[in-house]
Amino acid sequence: MDNMEDKNKQHKIIINKLVNTGIFAISDINKSSTLSREGIGKILRKLVDNNILKKTAKKGSNVKYKLAINDKALAFLFEYIEQVTINDLARVWDVGISSAKKYVKKFVDEDILNKFGSPPKKIIYTYMSQKDNNIFSLEQKNIIEKYYIYTTPEGRLLKGILGFLYWAKNKSGRKDIGNLAEEYVNTRKKYYDDQTGVLMIDATEKLHYIFNNGVYIEKLFHRDFDALPVFGKTALSQMVRTAKSGHANQVLMKKIVEKIQKSVAFIITQYHIDCVIFIPPTVARKTQLMTFIMEQLQVPCDKIAFSKVKTLIPIQQKSLKKIEDRILNAKKTIIAASEQKYKNILLIDDVTGSGSTLNETAKKIISQNMAQRVYAFTITGSAKAGVFDVISEA
Image (tube, rainbow, N blue to C red; front, side, top):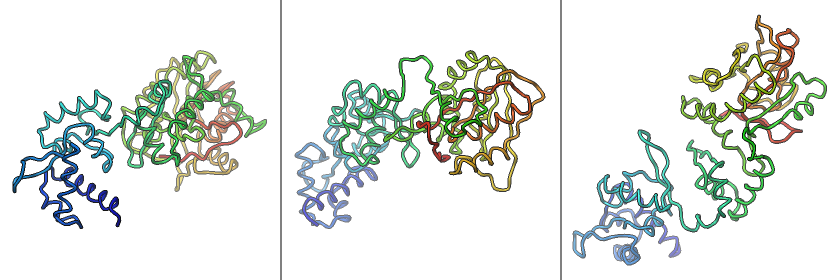
């Protein structure tokens, strides 16, 4: 092992010791290190000289080490650990919780630490270096902060610059973060018109491309794309996936309802909708997103929840790759029934892949004379008109 690797290993041991047990003596590090006591002493002295560590005494057996309370020391800490809690910081600084909160507030206000979460849930802190802050232009910062979200493998929703940096550094395979940010801004400008009051994507062309003359839907709209080229799942798409992951996250579900409320209201008014029908989910969950949306969405007309035929093995539409399989699945499983007759019905679903479920449901509605015209709206859908995505469930 060369000197750099050896030093990094010792630094990691020091950080782990601080985070796990707090202040430490040389003997505590010596047990976990391959270096001699003298070698460890040299590393610790250098860290003290650089104002990264502080000594609790000048010399003697009472000498112990703790993390200094400054930006440089925080940068050192976050080289070896991704996130910390207030308890972790109190431990590494060797201070009480109330004192740690005062220091943390200062670092958060100075944009050195990022804070995530709110009581009573656990709050975590991550580090934002000046180098990271200076990567982005003002326009890039504003757009990324407003729209970008990344879901980490362990299920954390990282918003704005922090989420973008996490994705760029760990998942994109690119080092030119500034160029990536510019690409993101340009991609949003290409796919969205952020000047409109109601964000909605007309995806009707995709239905005609896939089903040719067999389209039974007048208009298909998405509130947002499921994913964008290069940048993957959109913020709203990730919110939907998280809400459907089996956790009863009603706060997140309420945010989804808020985001689609204006779009649904616009369609109802524009196309004189007199009934809204909700597509049923395939997979049984404790709290269903579509059920929640039906209960919370404010509409000035009738609401109906269709049902699905229960099968021995539930097959999700989004798992089927062939269009003919999707059509058959929708044809055999959706139960469309209502004694009431309507002029214009609006179908609502969470995600559109091919549109087979919506189109087959619309076909049943029209063939049974339940309505004269059928419109459709989904929270997210494919960004490409000529193809459909096999969109995995969360």
